[in-house]
Image (tube, rainbow, N blue to C red; front, side, top):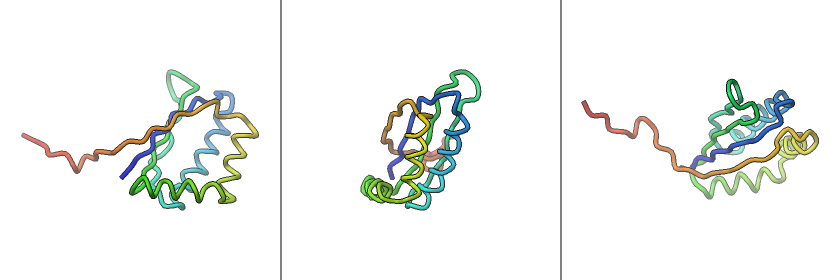
Amino acid sequence: MITIHLRYQIDPEQLDTFTEYGRRWIRLVNRLGGDHHGYFLPAEGDNDEAFALFSFPSLAAYEQYRIAAATDPECIEAYELVRGTGCIVRFERRFQTPLFGDEVELRP
């Protein structure tokens, strides 16, 4: 399994637009074979930073998702929302291997 961690620098004046973008991508990632773990929006502290986490069974499955997303009309519409508004200033993408709680042996 591979988990993608996205760190966004967003325009804090467009938090509502970014929130709409996030709602769309949660559904789209899930529809295209991933498991979206949600967006994490600013609440306290920095008001221009947001995060997202989603997983795919493998890096190959993620690559297939990227190919499908490039031509999917709903994905293109979500990309255009960002291009048209500038709600995302920049982003960083990291690939990580998750360790879930049920995989950890607990000791007394």
